[in-house]
Length: 279
Image (cartoon, rainbow, N blue to C red):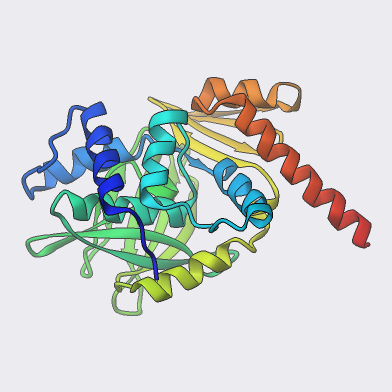
């Protein structure tokens, strides 16, 4: 059962909203949902916090899941974000706190089923996909009769109904015309037990054994994988190796303190060394 400190979360939520000049009780309209979601999208996708929590909770006996109040406090204090499950749980809780009707949904990616998740918000008769884990820049309409498009500065996001009712495929289209399938999402609310089951399983995925971070800047998508940095601009990509300046580079690009980055990196190296010794 997913539990968290409601009072502490309410305080963190109020502080988060205030930092973006947003009201605590927004009117239930699309423009309010869009503003709140765009503010939340400032949280980066990062597994620095997940690696640290996973490795150090095993030593201390603390719970592995980062709760919604921890996610917001981590952002406010250290510019941390999370991976898709912690971001989804936090966004779902924040939307609910602000009076929006929302639910959590699961999705499939190339690496397997139920390894992605997002939030669906409902306004009157419309439902909107809010996917902070995939850095979707704005909510996208879930329309079972036709595809929805969101034109971003880097990609055009295409959400198209699948043959299976209530299921949608997300694709991205670059300015150069490169179309790529990203994931399949099911517009079906999941309860705490099902969500927690797949959240727990996510800790066994290979991505937890390597640093992965991503965020959207004004006209650039920043992506870090292991020691490699990719800057995707509207019409070009720039790649470089940042191992010599890993902590400093991530702090400059994400605002996450270099000490936290190096702490996570050291855990990753220990995991690799333990795996080598088993061979």
